[in-house]
Length: 324
Length: 264
Image (cartoon, rainbow over the protein chains, first blue to last red):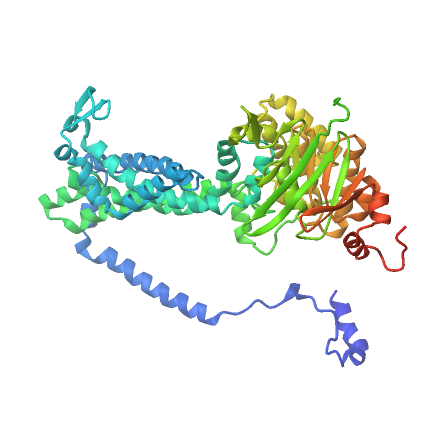
């Protein structure tokens, strides 16, 4: 290669002078672009990071020993469990409700469409905190709940106070609120799927329900999962609102400890580290779900985790199968 | 009327408008079993819309479409016409296959998954049986080795052949082709047309909207020329393509003929 490259210019230089090209250009051995400012910035960031770590370690006010002492205690564990339980259940309620509401909003039936719009308008518009307190105090509004003929005799009834436990009030308050937000996320996802997909499914004689669950929703998931991941993390932190209805979640537990011991900063750190740990786990989980729904979305869609890493490291080399 | 001379698809005075725009102004067309009818016409003539009315992807505003003796999308009951619920329309569509200009394969399913989805999920046929049939169909369209590929890993021509196999897997009585080669690179058109030629030779009833004049000449039993929302000329390929009587047909065809070559 190199001998050819050296010989060619001498013989062909005269002919090519007009065009200004002496030899065939091969960019494979091009010099990489230099980014000197990037190096300066890296050094600056490194110094700042070192300062931050130094401060975290040497500043006695963080009281890391207290953080460590409380990190694994049983009461923190109970609070954490309540937080996780509430997040999972309220999100599940929210997602199921969200799909139903989104389908209603895109329905051809005007009654379903307006009811869904009304629901979303109300539950997005009223603060979640108010909704929580409302469900918790439902008995003040309706002391008893009964089943019967409207405006006629009732068959059976319950005391509202016995029916609505703090946990149920929390699930209703957070879940119904979440349903409104999820509805808009799911609707956005459904609308992003090409109309031709629905037509192809219809032409094959599929019912509307089957078209939705087998064709449209699986493709919409690619657009639904990332914002839903954010919603889960929001929910994780929104569960701390339930302290107003006397449910001891992670943050409430921490608060009740430092109200007693006055070790505010280290105990808040305990909660923060736990929140970050869960968020990290959720992040990994989300990337797995995203990869599942990316199946077939492009020519080199990776199907295994190892392949994802490979492609990220060497983006320039992508294997393209040439169709015969 | 005996079964033999009863048309498989019969359109009578089909009208359709999108807002103020009248796209179909009364289309009459009969297609008999085993017949291949090619619909030609300039863009905006309503030929694709008409095809979409046959399987009720578009609701018609007037007239009627009958497939295999059954009204499409409607039902005559107690001397009145009732619109059918979506569920019943879906049942009618199962016997009408459709191939789209942009393939519309399901990108999240493999080639095999695309083909068996409807027979398994809609017709409730056993998966093993459908898979076997799907492999035969894939072999027929020349893609036996692509069963586990995803649609985006295939060329346009391959995708369209999978789309044809997907429609055939439902064992339709009638196949509709909506400009099946218009989205393809020129060198990929041939493979799709070859597949369609095979289907015609097998005796499948086909209505084909296309711009491929040579395909019409070679394969069609009848060529129909549409313009301005009506059928302006209809007949054998020789009649319509070589001796068109309508001036609009003549003007349209003249653009497709290579310069210097006589119309015959």
